[in-house]
Image (cartoon, helix red, strand yellow):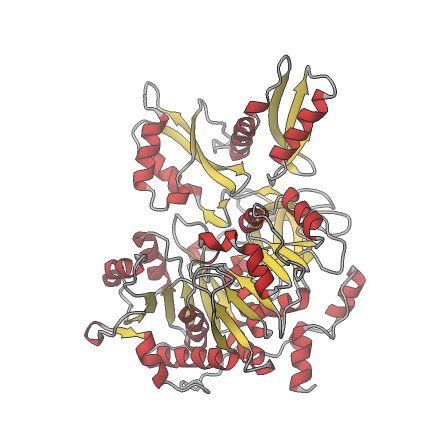
Length: 633
C-alpha cells in the first residue's frame, strides 16, 4: 500500500460502516497492526500536518467570545513548535526514559510541550489547580526531570506553587517558564526566549520512537490520596487517535470546540491527539477551557461561528449548555453530541436528541484504557443510557471476582458484574508496582471498578461502582483520604464518604459518621475540621450525617452500597420536599435493582387524578437529570 492510501485507511472514509457484529468481525479479520502506520504520537501528528500544512491546527480564544479574533497556528507552525520543544527538552538532558511534567492552562505552549515532551521523553501533564502538596507528590512519583510551568502572570498562582515545590524534587534539573524570564543561574529557562534556536524539521536527538516506548504518565485514582500514575505507550495513545478517527466525523476541514484540560486523557488524547492526527482544527475556547464563564454563556454562538460537526464534553458541560437559549444561533452544523468522563443522564441525552435532532454517542473508558474504549456506534441504533459497544479491536466483558479481585468467571447476558476491558489502548500497569494489586482480573484485562451488564445485543449498561471513587463533574475524588481526616478527630469512631446524586455535577461527596460513645460534636464543627485539613476543596463533603451504627458487612467492613442508597434517598427527598401533597404522602426509597443496579422508587399515596398525574410529571421533571433510574408507584 502507498503511504497516502494507508493514511486514508487511518482517517476512515474508505472503511465500511460497522452496523452489525458480523460487519465488525469482518473488519477485525485484518490484524490491527496492518491498519496502523504511525508508531508514535509524533509520527501521528506529522501525518495530520501533511494533509494540509497551511490549514489551522489550533485556534486560541482568550475569553470564549465568538467575535474575538483567534490566535491561529497552522499545521506547519504547530509541527515546527512541537519539534522545537522536543529539541529544547533534549538539550536540557531529557532522554527517552526521562519525564517532563507541566503545569499550564490551555495556552499554545501547553500543546507544544505535551507532544514535544513525548517526542523527547515522557510527558506528565498535571492539574495546576491541585494543592502544592498534591503536585509535589505527583512530581516525585513521576521522578520529574524538567518542569514546564506558567510564569508569574496576574490571576495565576502556578508560579508561586513552583517556587514552593522545586526544592522538594530531587531529580529536577531545569524549569522551563512560559511567559517568564530566563534565570540560568537557578536553572530556569524561558520557553519563549529559547524555542526559536532549535531545529524545526528534525529531532536533534536522532531518536526513533517505538510503539512500546513510554509516551506519558497520567495521574488517576482521585484528586486526593496517594498518586497513581498510569503509564501510556505511544502505541496506546496512537490507537486512541485511530479509533476516534474511525468512529467520529473528524478530519481535514473539520473543527472541534476544545475546552477539556490536557492533564485529562479526554483532553490530551480523545479531543487533542485524535483530531490533530487527522487534520482537524481545535478551537480552544479559553485558557481556562470550559471553566471560563463565557464559554457556556456563548456556547451556541461559538457553534455558529466555528461550525463543529461534533459537540462533545463531560456531562456537566452538556447539561449546562442546555440551560443556554439557542436564541436564533445557527447550530445546524452539529451532527453528533458526545460525552463521557461520567454517565450522561438519560434526560440530557433525550433533550439533545429532541432539540437538536442528533444522536448522543455516550463514551466510556478510563485513563488506564487511554480514554475511550466503548461508545455508541454512529451506524447502530443508539440506546440512551447505554455506553454502546467496544470500539474496534477492543473487548469488554462482565466478570465475577472475589474480595481479593481474583477472577471467578464470566457473567451471563444481563447479569450484573464487574466491567473488564482489553485492547490496544490498554495500559500495562501503574508506575508504582504497589498500585497494581487487583488492577487486572486476568492478564491484559483491566478491572474497571465499575459494575455493569451486557444485554442480549452486546450493549454495555453501567449500573454502579464496585470501588469507592466519587466522580464530581468528571473529576475523581478518592474518599479514603477524606475518611482518614475524619478519623483524625477524637470524637469519630467510624466514617465513610460516598457520592450522592446531583443534577449538575453527577455526584457530590457526603459523609456518614458514627461518633464514639458519649462524644458530642455538631456537624458544622466537624466539617470545619475536615475542610481545614482537606487540600482539595471539591473533595470536602457537602453534607454530614450522623448515624449509629454505620452498616457493616459480615466481615466488619463498612457496607457502602447501603450508604449510597441512604445518601440518594436523602438527596432525592430534598429535591422533592416542596411537592408534598396536601392530604397525601410522597415517600422515597432507594435500593438494589436486578437490571439497573440501583433504583429510586417514589411512592405517591392519597392523591386522586388529575392531581396525581400532575404530581407524577413534576417528580419526573425533578429526577430526570439524575443518572440513577427512578420509577413512580
